[in-house]
Length: 229
Image (cartoon, rainbow, N blue to C red; front, side, top):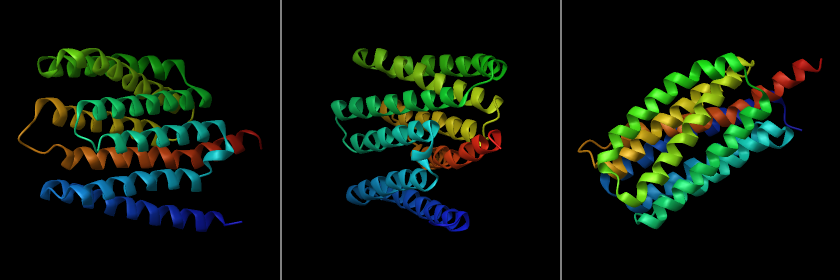
């Protein structure tokens, strides 16, 4: 059985490879190299699943839910490689399921009512501002899907802070928050068509957030072990 030190070193190596794949993805997109971008994206997304496995994803209910969310995210990333509306909607569903899995994971961990309620107002306010910002750009058939998605990802962030208040690692709210803001980059690129390529910061936010959620599995396992000592 591999030692804790070996597992940690493997995760560090995977984190470095993930950073390299993310950098490659950004560069390929800037240069218009579609095949390179697709390969870089799928490699990077596969790495955060590998990190979850090395962190002990199958050893706890929390870990299994996070693993499920990462797998759904992988499929979401794959679908978003397509440029048509059906592919975008399929990607949206993939990430919607991922956020639902993360919400389930944070609920399984346990949440602090005080922290959950404290996060509710600021997250809801930001989401309302985002909804108002996107409204003029959304086609009629995308209004409800985007609103539903915004609601679910907001709930994911709120429950992440709730879990932190119940003693969970800070990686959880940090990862959830980075994921949230990375989706602003996706929404901007998809609907507002900015002149600046927002994926330059959005992709690093996304992969760092997913990496943090994958790594949180090991911390939650240690937390549960301490409770039973």
